[in-house]
Image: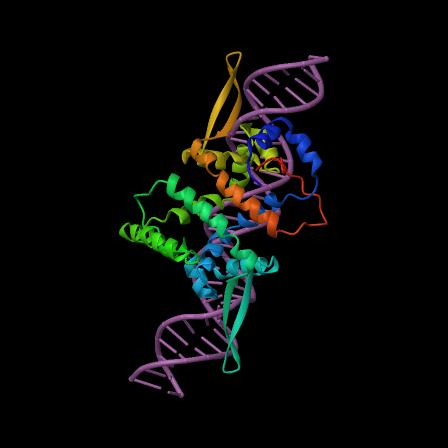
Length: 139
Length: 139
DNA sequence: GCAAGTGCTTTATATTGTCAAGCGGTGTAA
DNA sequence: TTACACCGCTTGACAATATAAAGCACTTGC
């Protein structure tokens, strides 16, 4: 959906009525709810760069504690945005590898939009060295 | 991002080199840090729909407590993403009105990307009526 | 006067994220 | 064999953040 002028005008004049027309589910509201959770966008961005192991991912996002990362990954897996496979090593489970599902990969559009916006509008912070995860290749 | 076409990869490599020349700052990482704060994306989306008063905004985002909203608005104002004006009423200050700055309005691209992704990939939740702020017209 | 609404501020409490330690496992080198 | 590095989590104590509730000074309308 695009922000066409007519739509915008209609929105300005009948927001309440418009809301009443579509009670119940709002995709973008729900999506924001998911994406605004701490670390989610970082996780998505890191995995857009390629599948990753658990600790590798934690480091790639700039350092997320394992408890929260576990919870986030489980939730994203429940939402079918990421998938997890385990690499057998000599018959024993030894390594988990996380990757984005096709639906998850589509979030590239969101990350890209953020990146484009950031490059245009965010000022460089001179005071600290911000260690980042694959900044050179993430986008 | 490695997902890009070769030509784009080359272009991005150039951007990467630029980043490498300036260690420390990663625009998208920082932007994600800002946007992932609770309520921020909701606030941006609500204000894309037009300027709003404090309580009006709180309701529009689905109900944010005033302490957090105050903090968020102050931070976004510091980042020059939103502006605030006060409406004088008979010589007394009575009403604050918040709106997006031009830079803030550019976040429409991000909200739009989220919306497009959500419509394509998020399942409708049958169990609850999610009351939202101008769902049909926000983007 | 009262009611409804405004824009916050404050405090106690609830919720979320982190730190540190740890477990059972893998692989490599001495 | 031991020591070390790394893995993928789990757990409990603690820190940080968000919320609920109450409230203030103000406005408008009846």
